[in-house]
Amino acid sequence: MLCICTKSCINSFSVIILIYLNAAIECPLLDTITNSKITYSTDTSPNYSLGTTATYSCSEGYFLEVTASTNVVRTCVANDVMDAIGVWNGSTVECQQSE
Image 1 (spheres, rainbow, N blue to C red):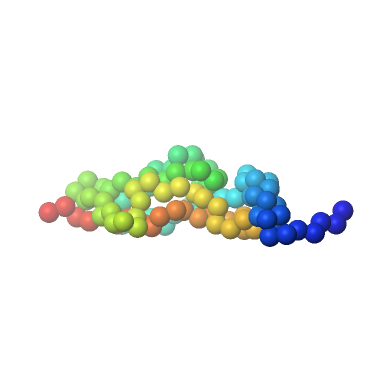
Image 2: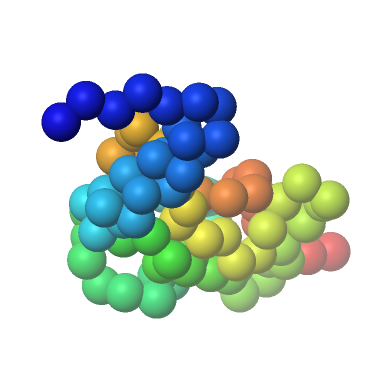
C-alpha cells in the first residue's frame, strides 16, 4: 500500500504511531538528590511507563526548594512521537537544610 500524506495527514499518522508505541515508551530512573527520597507510583525499576508519577520528599531537617520550573510530582511523558524514550516533566527539586 502506498500512502501520500499532506501535512494534516502526517499529524494524524503521528498520533496513531504514538498510540501504537505508548506501551513501549519508558522513562529512566531519576537521578537521586542529596537528602531526598523519590517515590514512584509503580514499582517497575529501572524503567517506568508513561503516566508513572515520581514524588519527591526530603529527609528530616530539610525542605523542598520549589521554583516555577520545578515539580514536587513529576510525570513520565512522551518525548517525541518517533522516540520510544520518555522524559520526566518539570525539573529536579532540591532539598535545603532547615534553619
